Length: 257
Image 1 (cartoon, rainbow, N blue to C red):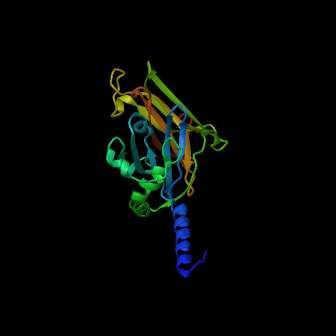
Image 2: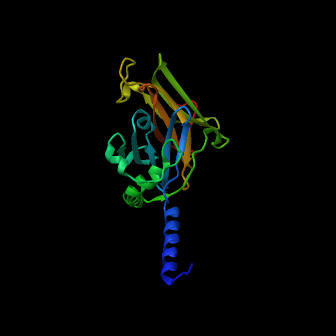
Image 3: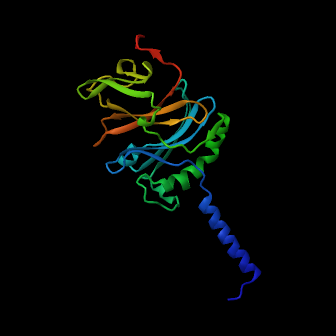
């Protein structure tokens, strides 16, 4: 076969295009928390941290994916000093609507369809998210979730709860260090916006801390907690984060808790 200059240009362009397509995804990596086999899991895409304690992440709601063919993502920027939510962005693709089948992408074998996120969702919203990351001075970091047993040796985390039948009306997280303690999170259904009655349609049956992400700038962590409700056919899990510093804020055991 005789190769012309034109042929070489076409071949070069093909390989260049293929190389670009293969390496163009530079977005966050998925962190699967829970059991994929039993469908009791959620997916977190950590985006990064700022030097002033803002943690950014993206959550894919597996509850909606299991109950209906809906791909629902929420981008969250949260101050891990105050736990205040600074910015959110909801992204929804409803595959029960035939219009969404017009999206062209190369599927993979992940149950949460990571390929769809990379090739469609991230490609569509990367600029908007990147602009917000710059606005809040958040640096992109590919961090993996750490087990609670991997906390520093002198620190332990303890959870406590109070139940009424299967209904959790109080839940607490505390850190303990060298004979001192620190309250990290407190839930009391009487002070919450959610229903505080086991007869209500939705109520929290369980809270469970799953792990944490650590800031690269300070000794601060974002603890991932799942709150579980009575869902349709199976429990629904809703993840949220609470922040705490691993050195500051500890009190003597004699102080009021």
